[in-house]
Length: 165
View: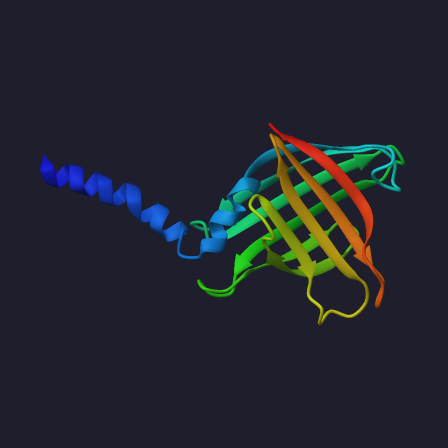
């Protein structure tokens, strides 16, 4: 009976330890779940919008996959997929983004404060720079997508607030 208790305790702790191989993984946990988002008329040039997105740990917590879909009053429909990953257990996280317009963006992630993640496009990529930021504001997961022309400052393209489903 004692051996069984030890085995159960071991099997409970191992997945948690595995997920904590990289401390940055824990900094991403606030994103996990299914969310419903809303952007007001002034939050985007596309008109008011609403959509849903999810962040889900996959492949034994080796990656996080975000699926997103949004519709705007202008008639625009947007779908995208982003995968957050680590090149090695001690490396900072990175992400790669794909959308229904054909864009591909490679991001480096940073965590300037608790419950805040910033995805900034790789400076080695030619063309404009992109920055995608998420932060937890109470029960709301808020976000902002910014674009900067080469040698220019970032300008907000889209911002939103979301609630967990």
